[in-house]
Image 1 (cartoon, rainbow, N blue to C red):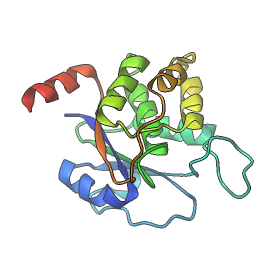
Image 2 (cartoon, helix red, strand yellow; image 1 turned 180 degrees about the vertical axis):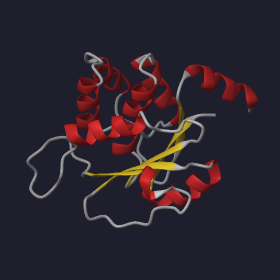
Image 3 (cartoon, one colour; image 1 turned 90 degrees about the vertical axis):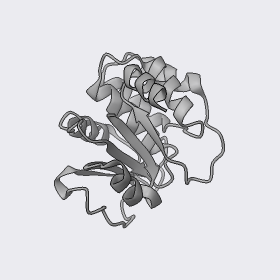
Length: 182
């Protein structure tokens, strides 16, 4: 199954190994240090230095910006979909779910935003995608406000301790097949 694994930093190695991931996107504060799992090659690890904020101009914090989203989309368009992809941030609640939505739309532009966010809410009741990333992704992917509206439609996620991970299937056909197999 082709899926995006969304998780907190603490689970990247475990989940990359368990699911056979070969590529990873890290959305983490600029000076946050961590070790890339050995199964992820340095060439297929995209690091996007940003803080989990929704507006620019907050001191030394780095807000998500157009360059981050453009790099994410470019990376996704080169993804070998034969293996799952790990997308993580510090807690797996805001930046990484937003990036997973953008990634899914970058590789499957025919995807319906409302179906995608409904699927996100089903597999991740705790997810609260970063609004700034979503807005920028919507604009760059030319979704005409549909991604922003879809994310607003699912609302804020449930409270969490930041240890929850999930798999976001790339399309409904794969989700249905996965559900049928279980």
